[in-house]
Image: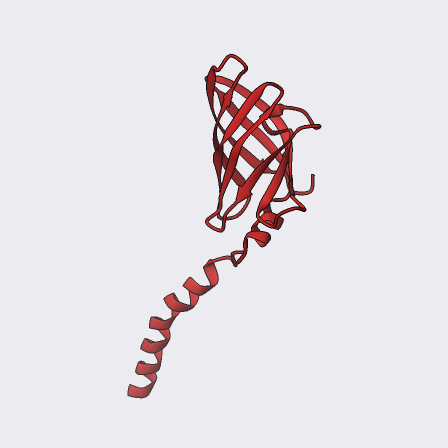
Length: 144
C-alpha cells in the first residue's frame, strides 16, 4: 500500500511537467522558416492619423536574401509596388527607408507567436516633408 501511495504521488507531481511540454507549439528555428510561415495573403487594417483604411497585401520571400520579404500593396500603394523588409529571429520586421510614389516609408512590425498577425508602426513622409504616423494590423488569410 505504501508503494502504491508513493506511485500515485509521483504520478500526480509529474502531470504539470508533461502538460507544460504539450502546450507549446513548435516555433520555427530560423529566419527562413519564419519567412515561410508569414508568406501569403493578409487582410490589412491600418489607422493613418485617425483615418482607417482596409485592404489586402501579399507577403513573399525575397529570392535575393533569406531574411528579406517583399510586401505587395503595402499601405495600399498598389499591386505593382513591393516594399522590402527584413525579418529577424525575434519575430520583428524592419522596413528600411524606401521611397515609392513620392512617399518615403520606414518603420517596423511585430509578428505574433502563432504567425497569424503582424502589428505595424511606421511613418509615411510625403513630397512636402510632412510625416504621418501609421499603426495597423495584418491578419493572415488562410486559404486565400
